[in-house]
Amino acid sequence: MVKKEMIAMLLAGGQGSRLGVLTSDVAKPAVAFGGKYRIIDFPLSNCINSGIDTVGVLTQYQPLVLNTHIGIGIPWDLDRNNGGVSVLPPYEKSDNSEWYSGTANAIYQNLRFMENYNPDYVLILSGDHIYKMDYEAMLDFHKANNADVTIAALPVPMEEASRFGVVVTDDENRITEFEEKPPKPKSNLASMGIYIFSWPVLRDALITLKDKSNLDFGKHVIPYLHENDKRIFAYEFNAYWKDVGTLGSYWEANMELIDLIPEFNLYEEFWKIYTSQDMIEPQYIGNNAKVSKAIVGAGDRIEGEVVNSVLGAGVVVEEGAVVKDSIIMKSTTIRKNAFVDKAIIAENCEVGEGAQIGVGEEAESKLNASIYSFGLATIGDGSVIPAGVTVGKNTAIRGVTTLEDYPNKELESGGYIIKAGEEA
Image (cartoon, rainbow, N blue to C red; front, side):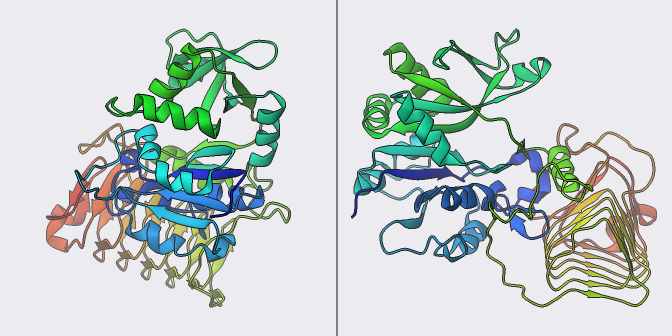
């Protein structure tokens, strides 16, 4: 193997349970975003745009869609003989088989992969945030400060700082204190979970701490290095960054893409977002169709009305159907005269003729009020909604449903239908 200056390790094994039925069959980093992309496309594109050509993607939960999407890395120019992209699931060792347990444990289990490249630096990334970032500029900062560890940090409103891991810095940006979700934060600099380690420092820390249960960077590795007087610095990031970990934040981030002047721009020439896309047919907009303020994916066929919505590839909106303020993912069909309002509908679904989705007054979810809120109707992969039914707000549906599943042809607000054998 040729020695690399910096390699990236991308943590993409998370379940994303706060996205409810959207992640029943799909790891959070593989969830569709922006009509064309998947969430993992953003850190992968950041890597290649930053000149990093060796990326290990650590998978665990429901990896099939993610593995298929990444393939051999062609869309990101990561199909290389030396380096490129490598998918790294937990694997069976001769003595035991062990799932990844904690962010740093996952990295520890792949020490041999990193040793192959003997890098000077290792970049640790999360696979579930939407942002554009030049990791090369962060590396320059790391070198200039002769740092052992550099943590990317984002200024957040002081009233929100208690939701994050917060870093306290001196005048030279050296970190003097860590506070994990403090009730009274001393700083508003929140850790983004993006780290650059000098390789010998990371290697020694992982080996020393390897027996800790659920070994984690924020809880174990960084405090350990701090106690041992390592040089730990904060690299301040002041651009768009979104954690799309809840249905509300996921819906908002998609809707922000269709603003007149979007805060996060998918169309910049100098920092492209790359993805794998198998749908290459053009869109078709019918004679009586109305489309306004929408992202429309490749191969879509629109005969009805689409307003303020994000549509993935291969979506069909039949005549008389209306889609408003919604996210409709790849290969989903909205049949004639259906009405969809403020809904998230996953891939390969069908909404029957004349069905009404996302209507009525709000009510608290009976399935999980902390997940199914924000007034959204959420429908999981491969679901079927029969013709003529009404579905309220803060609802969840997963599976092939029939008229018998809807008393009086209605799923009231706050209700749910999870078919046998399916997960919520």
